[in-house]
Length: 451
Image 1: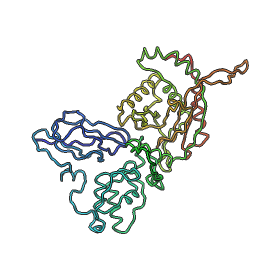
Image 2: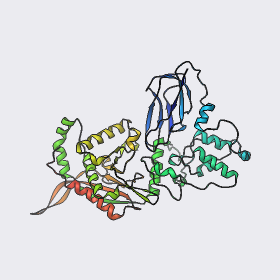
Image 3: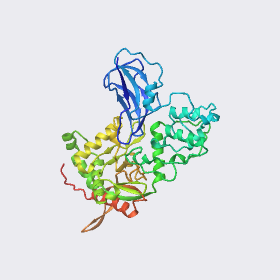
Image 4: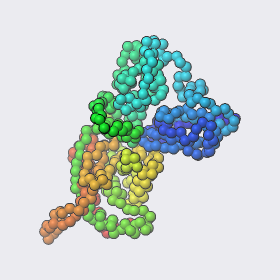
């Protein structure tokens, strides 16, 4: 009977690999068409992958926590009475297709002196993940964990690939030590976007934090996969971009009063709650049109000026981690469209229903620290963007109100805007003018506006 290869599908632009986090079916189980088969995690989002065909699962080629590349065969289904393959190791034909060595010949016959038995953990001291294939080659060739930690991998987020370890082994056999290298393709990979700013002189993986010893009674908590990715991305962003933050206070009184007057009718008419977020995003989009050099990315010494305005909005996941869904072409939407998009993305984030394409392609990010009662913040740039805007809590405060008849003290609704930007390409003039323009648009909001 026929055998069907289940391959890891393309899961969005710039996603080249995924970690198998859980098989939902066991070898021998019947699988229906489009039935969830396996859970995978990329550096952007977790997904359940449905089966592309119906049949019996006869072989699993990647176990839990192994990393597969897009296009790799991860499982085999049988549409008939084929025998179940007990081992999960790739067959010769599949291995050739995957370009994996299946014999036991050492990678280099000149390295027999390094073949002492070494057992390597899947995660190094720095938290870097090493795939079973990389660990297997390293163990065979006597490559220590300390040596692995020094490798600047060319895979996603600096991960060491098969090619990296083979190159290292070959270089070591000829007496050459591998120098730190940056993959040329890194300009198209990030944790959250389609282009990554290259780290030109050193790898973020080489930045070592202090070794901290627990005290008696302390609780040890291992970071989950997403928290490790967030940590890497934040350290990389601070390492790559010199951050500067400008602050502006905006009078939100007209917007607060207008929203209070329309929210019930809007909910009745559209079935959606209207929040402050889409109103603020509308003002941000207008300001980006006025200052398009905020809507850029940097690749080496090249500036990429974005045509589209895609606004990322940081959202909290049930786990407490953050994710940044992206509203594509926000400049083409009216306020109703922005409201529906904001609500949809926020709900999908809370319910873990975001797709890989939902968190890609952002050109500017907004984060609402006011949700937690914070007045202002100093947000970290979401690479490869060059700016991010934090929204503080809207508070009633006493303020001086200027009128033709004189000044007087009144109660106003105020909010701080905190604008962090990459000082390599955004100077204080541009960064400060931009956030001031956002505040101007908010303060000029028409209180008689109709939806």
